[in-house]
Amino acid sequence: MKIIIVGGVAGGASCAARLRRLDEKAEILMVERGPYVSYANCGLPYHVGGSIEKESSLLVATEQMFKGIFTVDCRTNCEAVGISPKRKTVELKNLLTGEVTAEAYDKLVLSPGAAPIRPPLPGIDLPGIFSVRTVPDAKHIREWLDAKQAKRAVVVGGGFIGLEMVENLVHRGLEVTLVEKLSQIMPPLDPEMARLVGRYLSKHGVKQELGDGVAGFRQAGDGALEVLTDSGKAHPADIVILAIGVRPETALAKAAGLELGQRGGIRVDEQMRTSDPDILAVGDAVEVKDFVTGQWTLIPLAGPANRQGRIAADVICGRASRFRGTQGTSICRLFEGTIAQTGASEKTLVRLGDTDFEKIYLYPNSHAGYYPGAKMLVVKVLFRKSDGRLLGAQVLGEDGVAKRIDAFAMAIQMGATVYDLEEAELSYAPPYGSAKDPVNFAGMVAANILCGDMPVAHWNAADGVFVLDVRNPPEIEAEPLAGALNIPLPQLRARLGELPRDREIFVVCRSAVRAYYATRILLQNGLKARNISGGMLARSHQIV
Ligand code: FAD
Image (cartoon, rainbow, N blue to C red; front, side, top):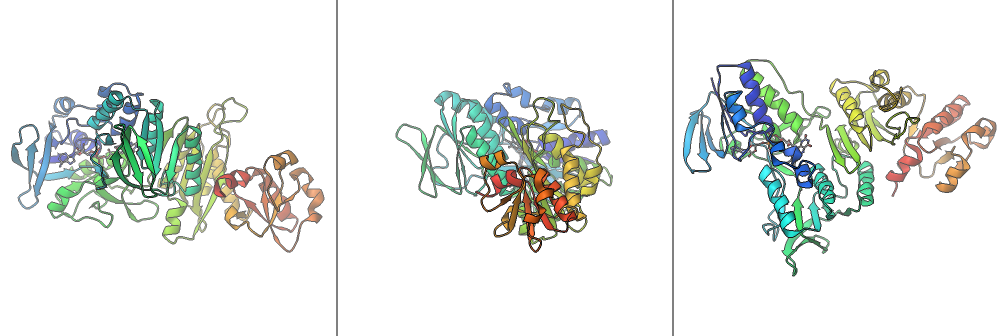
């Protein structure tokens, strides 16, 4: 059997290596348009920033390794320029000599990835405007930064590649402005969580222009660039990084008559087969089903691309592997902080008209408070009201974020409920967590809501209601809450008579823990009470 793989990085290289492990006899040809295979594109921002100093560190596996260890006919600088599904051939162009040859296949795997979006804006081709996709891109950015002694950068696009570039340019000593067309950065997050990320960026000196798209670029008098925005602003820059998203590379597939999906990616089934059963496709170029919502989606991430490459190899070798769908689990470092999410966001659920969900906000310590160095985590969890199934989680913080998001991610993929989170047995010693881990804690809070022990409320419903603030006087002085009745928690039992019996009472404290105790007291004394999720801490980033 002869298999041709187009694209030699995440999905393609995984597929080639797995194919060889499964079939010693298969003839495998992997072609890659660029000069390197299997490079770490996820490491490119850190190479620009200097934490990964050597370019060679980015080369996870080389052409020689594929040839030597896997006996894969691996060709770099070789572009697939046409597919004939009828004849089962691919036209390959040697980019060094220009020679075009046709190669026959039994099975073809497409893993061409996704290209950075470069809209046809005025001045887009001026020198100094870069996208970040390949090792040569990172090299050119580094050379430009050095040659121009760059001091000011504009990063266009506040997704995870944009934020990683922001961090790395700041790390190199540049003054950075982030321009984002949407009203929030980090689109997979809900806006109130993204707002915290924005504040964090400001704290680190990064200027942000949100809700303002780029209209064009022009050369300024001093030889630098100016980034012009829809609102009429001009941001000076010695370098511009474009990170406004990626588009699946589907030209080959389209020309070959393969079916594309509604989101513009190559349509595949659970076994990564395209509309032609002898052609499979994986990675950023394909549309996949969202594991939580069941909707078709494009999620350009390395984990799914690697898994899909492996599944394609399994399927070619007659195994019954299937892709379960993606839940968009991702993580991004930002200075000392970490941003992570998995599963559905609230805004996605709302967009889909889903009303069978509840949300909670928690602000637990990253590890036992008595052990030095604990940092507050910000956790948002979404779950089904009807059966408690976990739908999504977003976690921000400076310590222990990865540990929690991965627990949530695994729970979502296993179809776990908040009751399962309550019971999860997670690793604990004081430097790492708490005996009641934030993941358990989230399960307990959510389960309390679902079983009626703790009715919940949110700030957007708090206008005009009776609010009981159970914080202590110094806290109230530091952060007053207009219109609320203050009864500190220790006095509550003695002062129940001050509370209305005919109205619902929204209870608030700093983080919703004392308000939970208060809610229990009120409910057991026959009053109607709800705990405002996340308390004053949630208010600080929900109400602006
Ligand atoms: P790629 O890995 O992009 O490989 C596609 C290859 O196909 C390319 O090298 C291309 O040259 C080649 N190709 C295309 N067309 C042809 C053709 N016709 N003939 C021959 N070759 C062709 N994901 C994460 O999960 N975590 C991260 O931290 C992360 N960071 C990232 C940072 C950056 C800067 C970038 C660019 C991406 C990052 N990603 C990250 C995304 C991740 O790298 C991709 O999701 C993943 O590489 C997709 O794998 P793929 O095989 O589909 O495509």
